Amino acid sequence: MTQNITIPMVDLRAHFAPLRDEILTGIGKILDDASFILGNHGRALETELACLSGVAHGVGCASGTDALMLALRALEIGPGDEVIVPTFTFIATAEAVLYVGATPVFVDVDDRFYAMTVAGIEAAITSRTKAIIPVHLYGLPADMPAIMALAQKHGLRVVEDCAQAIGAEINGQGVGSFGDIGCFSFFPSKNLGAAGDGGMVVTADAELERKLRGLRNHGSWQTYHHDVLGYNSRLDEMQAVILRAEFPHLAAYNTGRRQAAGWYAEHLAGLDLQLPESPAGYHHVFHQFTIQLNARDAVKAALHAEGIASAIYYPIPGHQQKMFAHQAHAHCPVAERLAERVLSLPMFPELREEQIARIATVIRRTLHG
Image (cartoon, rainbow, N blue to C red; front, side):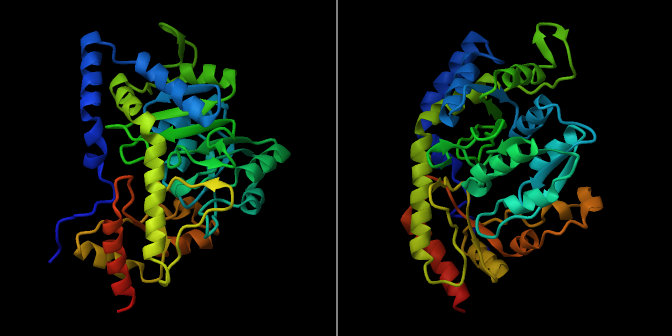
């Protein structure tokens, strides 16, 4: 008989408990001041996240998906344009391309680092290609130095999807600072998560920042003057105060995740499965701890029977989704194989080694029959 889940994918109760009083005090102050939209906490968070990313400007918005859409609009990408995206990621990356009227072109990924390769991107470039959206999947940066060199060679814009990788770096340089624009998500389960939806766009370009600020606010740069079609996509003050309470602890959160990943590597050593890898100089922040194994479904069922959560990110690649049936001809064999092999295990900063040992025991027992 299936037990209740005793080890969740992410333990948000444990995560927010130490911050509860600080957050409630902050929310109470917002209620007292009655300043809910585009206020001081949102502006401060924009500055803090831009600084973390190593760029000059941050613009808060309503979600990570909106961040991608706003980025593409700011870069003036639209109908008739193509944008190269990985097929093995969450659908929001491709959705954002459709929202601006452009066409997502799906590219396969590497089976070790889960990102598009430069060779794969270059093979997909056509005369209509205007941008590339590399995704830093699971918390590991894509090969941004090589992607930026390719983009410069072909005159393409680059939007980094940093939704799963806040705080990740390549040789000390933060994600979000390589491309023209970086996009972050504050979905509750992210490494820096709100108590609802939220997102942020960062850029070093002052003109792009100006565009983004108007686009997120009904196409308005001056009250009741609407110059272009914009959106109602603003990060509210209550989410901002929650995120600011967490922000000083982000490095510790990511350290906790990296410690948990180290414990997983020790306890899963020697089993017939593939552990996460990181290239030299890459700082992985382990939004997910994702393994590959042939007996994925059996292991998932065994974990569930023991009250341990697990998840498949992602079971259907983008090019195989029903909404993209017209692109089903895309050749992405690695992503299709990954969809049958990947399994994400519980991962959060508060995860204890004894919990990981228990997870590993179930996996070991299942694989050894």
